[in-house]
Length: 185
Image 1 (cartoon, rainbow, N blue to C red):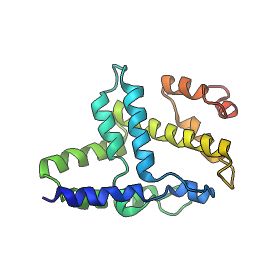
Image 2: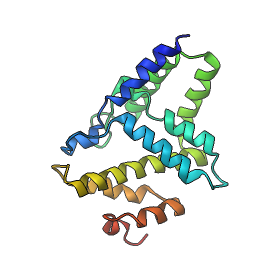
Image 3: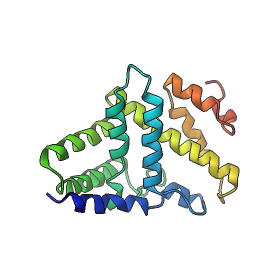
Image 4: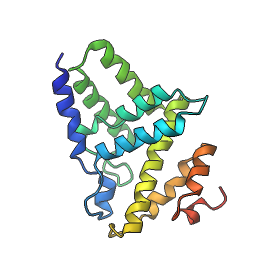
């Protein structure tokens, strides 16, 4: 077991810029690490008073959901760069390789948590997936407002249709710049 090697590898996500923002021509885009931090923080605060979400489990899931990208990079599905199945296969293989440096019981626990997120069968997994999208939407709003993007952010704003949790929909309705995309919700 070499936990320091695991951390050395995971820290690479702080240097990997998010592919969607690069494709949109964003100057100095956020990193995968930036995104993971905000997803975890949003998860913490937005789940804290909910009886249907295990906050500790959800935060762990948010922290773990993108760490495989330290090996795979930020693979984009919507450009056709890779299929959903291939992305999953690559990330799973990467995560397993990374977790080989961790205590086996801990490795299994976090691999299972990552798989739970991927499978989207539990309230926590569905909640964290929606928070993951909310962080992306909020980031798109900021890039749009600041003029940091060469291209339209509409494809990211359109992701509001993926948010189905009533409390999260209510939150998004309060975000300036999303009014047109929240019509009828």
